[in-house]
Length: 158
Image (cartoon, rainbow, N blue to C red; front, side, top):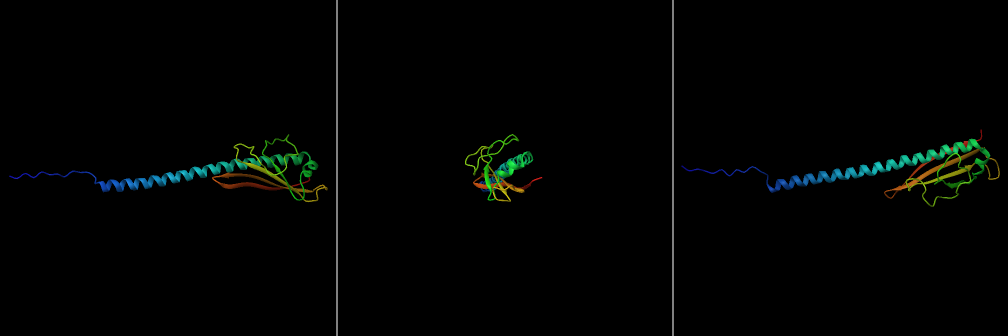
């Protein structure tokens, strides 16, 4: 009687293991790339929400200043547009004159924002204006890309 030994060993060949590892690596790299892009987008959205808050803060402050003293408010504008740097904490007690010119330093938290206000009136500088246009801009840079939140408003004498 001849006895045959069976050498059937169950398992994976090295080729099957390499294919599985390659497919798994591709899937993991794609997942990490997607996650990184998601975090970058989330950070940009957070910065955009903060910038919108800073724009609304200036709008509310301007509303109060206009109601407090129209004469002083309109005197801060020019017919060519006066630019103010508003990288300071604004409260209704904060009054004109503000720093004139574009912002050169950061002052808002986080320290990436530049907040400017441009006031333009509808008459020459020496006359009392009946309307003043404002342009509020908050700019920042994220991932070497420049972003700006802006709001245009027109104020008129009551």
